[in-house]
Length: 531
Ligand code: ADQ
Image (cartoon, rainbow, N blue to C red; front, side, top):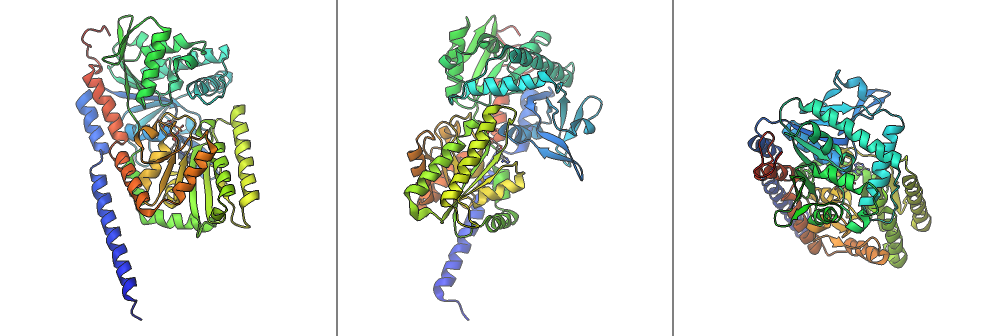
């Protein structure tokens, strides 16, 4: 039977739209900064100087399984973003070895080449004694600095023994970094709040090093920072760096402000720099982003579409719109607030019941701290209540998936989600928001975004709503679900332009370019400032 004319017309139109989208995606991707550009930039700006990246958490973990040793990518934004940088620059990455098979795969110096099967760089593991000291260090980082910097009304624990553990572990990191560097002048890229004192330990032994710290979380305002008993020591540690980077200018300004309050120093507002005891530290903002092209390409592959259809079927999502949340299970991410808003939405708009499902993927995190256990219990309780109130047999109102997903499992979730909700109470950047946008190659999704994320500064075409205002957040999710297709595509297109225009390679290139512009290249002397 010949299909009616209108059917043929529709099919032709759909085929033409698909072709146009593929072409648009091709040119969007070809315009993005690539790993090779970063490789070239590192060479141009630093010559042969070695680069050492240091972070508390390792990018890959080796774990024992019944079928042998397996390698898994560590969850969390820092590890995924910096892995792309390490691959492109061939840097050595110093991090704590913590998984149960980590020792089995390294050489005598604690080194192993990664990523598995495509070895591009060296991971040098550092072994912290798994006793009280390592535990206390972790508790200081996650129970003190984390809540101190994220202003979310969770009180930081100030415990002197934990501070001492932090000092000691920072010394150990400095030792391991020096070992990884060898005698040549090099660039050290310290990552995050776990390593706040490392620069002073390095500087004391190797004044010739160039040291950059990237602080991945917010920097608090000076009133909050004033409560921190070791506030001066931490600032001294950071001022031993040549350059301190934050995601957004607001955090950089807070940092300058706290230094002005706490230490005798000269704040150079013109150059955005701090001079103290003859040293100068520059402060800059560098908004981080994922490798958008990698995500877009994966999302446009047939396997991703197939996997999305399989997830729909296995979770009973057919014929329903899907709202997605993806987070570490952390109280800063606003997960209970999001679930409360979803509950209010179903309560106040009964026509949505049975036509919407929520999928919340949350990887358990920092389970040794009571605040995190309480959060986990609360989220499970809220999900159970939602399902009791609004679920149908075989079709729950919310699926709570409490595990870490690999890249190939995560992408199809982004692909199938009609709406993603990022409702962090406070967040340095938030990569999930940008990953979702990067995966929406067909422009068929809407992003609800908290204004308290760094990402909200750039993603102004998202539907923004405060997680503290349940009604506003519920209304925003409702609006995102019912946006007219033209508006949804227009907003997503604008968001994609932002994410494509500034990726992880641009982020790293800007930092390296600044080491050159600000005369911080390893082994060179800065004009007007003793090294
Ligand atoms: P995080 O607090 O970890 O990062 P975020 O930036 O959102 O937060 O990154 C989370 C990363 O983990 C994303 O790449 C996401 O895909 C992944 N992820 C989350 N849940 C997952 C799950 N269940 N399974 C698999 N993967 C999952 C910190 C700061 C942020 C900052 C980043 C980078 O807190 O503000 O954006 O560092 O600087």
